Image (tube, rainbow, N blue to C red; front, side, top):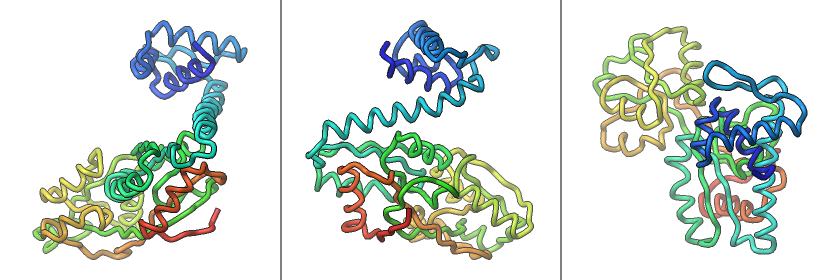
Length: 292
C-alpha cells in the first residue's frame, strides 16, 4: 500500500475502532489494513494503536497523529484537484458539507441551478451533524461548509449568509393545549445545533418537560406531524406542512429565533469553489460578508 493508503487505513480504523469495519469501508482485506497500520507505526517510530477488547483504540500519540493524517489526506485531495483544474475552474470539483436541514432543504435547489450553469464541475455533498462538519473543513476534507454560526475560534472565511428562522411547531390539537412544561419535546440527535438551541431555551424557561430524541431531522418532523410532540425546527424546512395546516407555529419566549445559514470556506478557496460562492450571491440571494 502507498503512504496515502496507509494513512487512509489508519484514519478509518481510528474512526471505526475496528480493523474489520475499516476493511469493509475500504473494500480491502483485514490483513491489508493490519499490515498498513503496522508499517505506518514502524515508520513513525511509536505505537499508534493498542488492543481494546475485540477492537482497537488510539494511543495518545495515535490520537495526535490522526488529526494530522486527516489533514494530510484532505490537502492531498485538494492539491490534486487544484492541479488538475488549473486554469479550468469550470471543470473542477466542489466538496460541500452541510448540517442536515441545510443539506436537505437549502442546498438541493441551489446545487441544481449551479450544475445547470456549470455542468462540468463535479459536486460532492456530505450531510452530518455540526460537530462533524466543522472538523472536516479544518482537515481540508471539504471546501465549503453550510451550517449555522461557526464555533468560537474557528479558522475559516465566512463568505455568505442567508436567513434561517427557528420556530416551535406542533399539531393544532397540541397547540390549543400547549404548555412548555407539559408538552413532549421532540429533539434532534446528539451533536445537532438545533437540539442544543432547544435545550438552551428549555433551560432558560426553567422547565423540565418530557423529551424524546429521534434520530434525524426527518424523523423529528414526521413525529411532530403525527402528533407525537412539539419541536424546534427551521421554518423553511416545514413550510409545506405549515401551509397545509398539518403543523402550526406555537409562540414561546425567544421564538421566532433568527439563526442564519453561513457558507464558510478556507481563507484561500479553489477557483471552482469561488464560482459556487458567486452563485450563492447572484442566484441564491445570499448576502456577502467580509468576516473572517
